[in-house]
Length: 300
Image (cartoon, rainbow, N blue to C red; front, side, top):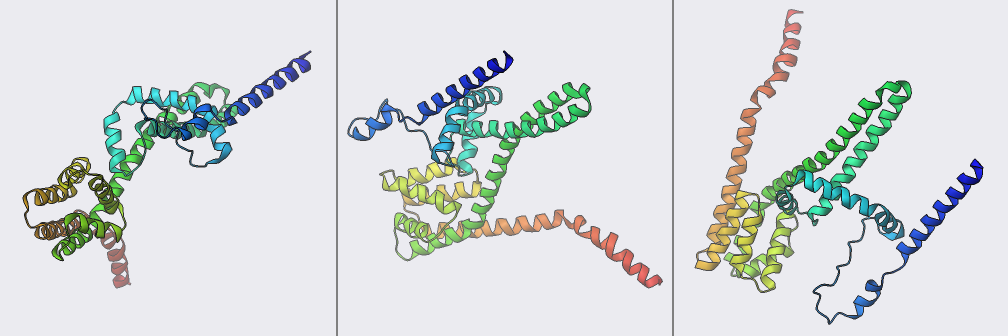
């Protein structure tokens, strides 16, 4: 009886899984019809979901099976943590093409990975000590929270790393723009020339500004938007200086040269301050390693 019951349950489960996979792999009516209706207005039409990073049928099956659970957990994390505006701003400053909901899903994934590691450790611990079930469950819950917060901390680290790269690229890009403008290029032409011949995070931001200008937005408005979204005061002053120079007709090359010199001076001053703060740490190997060895050699 038990064997027959287990066999019937297993067969029913396999049939349900096969039916679900067949339904997932079947193309939807919207995906077959909408490509032929391009002339219709896009208002109200569902947008196509983003493809998974791995691609293929396997990843689509995984997304279809576990996607609703991850989305519901991401919504719960959003309700608990909040701060969607801050997350959206940090995603833009980090240069990540993601929505807040996608970031929450990643937070849930990080939390589940940490939860799995803690659960494996708790299982091994429970096998040796059956009374440690409660403490293991508490550790698993803490691991999930740490994983969720760890992804948020990693995003802040991505923002700081990208801003450091932008500061390193800024003097060179500003000098190139100043040289192009001094050679007779217009601001848009100089921006196009510099963007096409350089690479980096700052060049990517300027490429977005150039794309906005080419779609009809005024140069001053595009740079004002860059100044508003940038988290670096130097880049904000750079964008505001270009916008002011374009609107009022002030010499743009002098402004760019002055801003590049200011950035180099700020970097030099930060390096000196960092060396002054670490002066004591630099004395540690001298006091505790070099001097004792030197004294012992003299005594010998």
